[in-house]
Image (cartoon, rainbow, N blue to C red; front, side, top):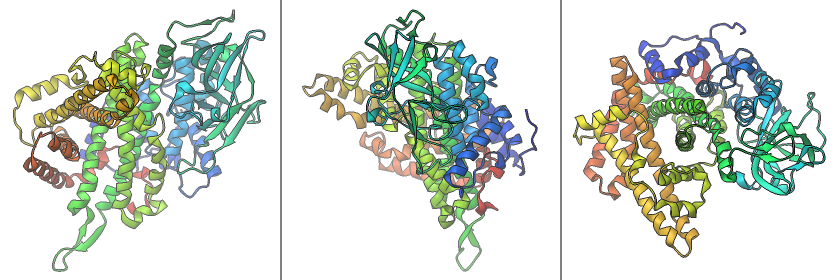
Length: 639
């Protein structure tokens, strides 16, 4: 590994450092190495750069970091990987504290292209492509999305046809809608692509499979039959070379099919250990869940950076004077400003603990290697819910941070506008958020007993009648701790942790039970599509309630794991703020369903205000604890 000068240029408060250690949890060593060794010049981009400059910078920095063993975890050690799959999520989160274009460049190269080869390929594929993928010599694309079908991967039109007389596959784009679109690395840098297409053998369609296709020569020259387009200027992520790819009867060797779950043998016969075409498809997609987890974590990291900039600015910027022409007042002393930032800082902590847990769950499922399908489906559901929750929060909160810095926040030199632009598309990456929340709701209804993707909306409605009542409330983490809290306190005070837990669980339980009843009725309706379609908003509400509950449990577990009583007490207040702010956001539901009245609603708001006042005195320590080095913020307003 290449030596580099220490990155740390500022001192932390003792409390901030301890909070950082607690929030890092099991990934502290990985994340601290970034803070100790990576400087702003290694991964913070100048917002003034044009597209060509930003793209070349992103590739150069990715290669340089990989050469120092950063962001290459999750690959087999035999091919040059350094670290576990869970640690690869931590690396992605740290990259996102520098520049989101570089983060996505790494995500495309190492997470998507490299992940496809790792998870869908076999030993030969690993030996052939992974060493170069890790170093960056074998630049690759993840060619799934098509213009005509978006999130509907099963309906993609690209064909991978077996040509028995030649012992090869032919990859073809039969319609304009089959053009691969929005593909990272496609416009400029990609040499290879993991191409998703319909596998046709002897006239039979075996469903979506993935094949590795050369799309550029080593000198980046054109490959016959492959046309790559450049999608040009985007609303953000200017350092990522998104493009289109079309194939005109491109011949590919048989060995290039990533055949871990199914392929054509040397005799030209299709074979798979998974008999069902649907099951094969969803098993394949399930192995790629890491990308969805990383996108949520990356969005959250970018938001931590925005909160760090806005809060530090609010601790130095004054506006208006005390009565009688007294001293000017710090922005963060205003209640409205506290309300903008502190509940979102609390969410940042909550989501950080939840991300730690899902990364560990990813590791367990990876190590199980398919032997625990229920755990794999639970992970897919958790990843879908977390990605939708975190990316929506990121877009909303970065905008709040921009506004909290006034006109200064609108200047590119202060970093927030680029964060806002770059985080925007995270709501679309790795699955549209609305689709993902529906997948979560389907899993809740089916109790994880089936792969949710096996069923359309009507099938889900019909299967709901067999739902095992109550099992969706099974706690994911902190079960023993929560049981103790609930058995030890019957308090209904708004500050009671037991009451917070009961409110989160009750909202989920009632929403999912109500959805189940509506879906049962919809399954019997004469116009089943219209009836099920009318349930979609209810599905989204159930998914959000479930994911909120999972996040609260992870936060409670994180506090329990903290060994420092003083830090645990601070985290307890932050958890209270997260819980009460979430209850306040959903008070319309609680009041409509007579869970509490107007007086209790007012008490919740007063408690949120009180916690904001209390935690205002720890604002600097709290943003230090979010883990973004001060030298990485790259905001002129903080100089």
